[in-house]
Length: 353
Image 1: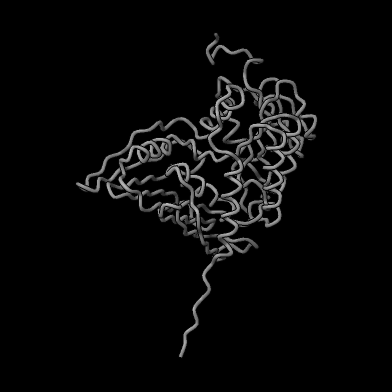
Image 2: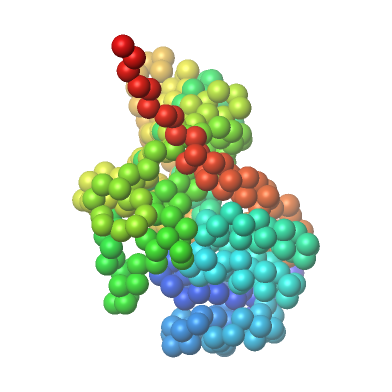
């Protein structure tokens, strides 16, 4: 049997990248290029020039501006859907109908209706379907999940997440000069900082604790940037067992400031992770012992990209018959919770004489 490094091209899992934007270009593509078990067979984008430029990074990869042609590429097994949110449904369903596995960027869609249709279509097609929550596979978060599962934090009482960035109206992704900031377009994105960033936190809480947030309320903010969607939010919720959760997100935090922090509090101690949330490997995880007050760093792999862990796990489910641990129906349930939380804001109490 060949080792992964010795696999021939036709033995590697074939990927189609749908959407040649920033995250696909700068994060998923490098992970695929470095993977000994993967190969990109096609790139498809409405902008054929962008598709061609990205495909050129992968020997033999085809460039297309037509979904059907791209998904019919010989050797294709998995489609990575990295289009703007409003196009997820069309692309993911076309992939599923072609019999290909789907890895769809979050949020699943710009609307709940499209998200539900996407999930139902993938289930109907019987393909492996996953949401691209790469934070599940950050090595630091995997170590933290194991730490919690062993009971080393005692009874977990609270999770606090800050995940923020600076996204002015004319923001352009690194390496781009278009200035087409679709993430603040209510039609293409479906929302602002809340819809873009809070899904990561909701998913990560469940991944770390083994139980999801069950109830939540959210306040959104229109404070700094002059665009139609929110530029900040805070979700407050709890799991069914009573763990309290706060998730603070923003597009209005200047990037020279601390902006990515994850805290998990228990009766035996506290885990504090700085700069682990995001697309890159690295960061720091500290454990503070409740009995002594002493702290120590937890060791983890600081070089492997979360995208690498994600593609490895999905390939194992698609080609190796392993179970995919995160059913898309669960991701849809959390997306519904995210939207429902916006309608659960408490009403102000009027003073009475």
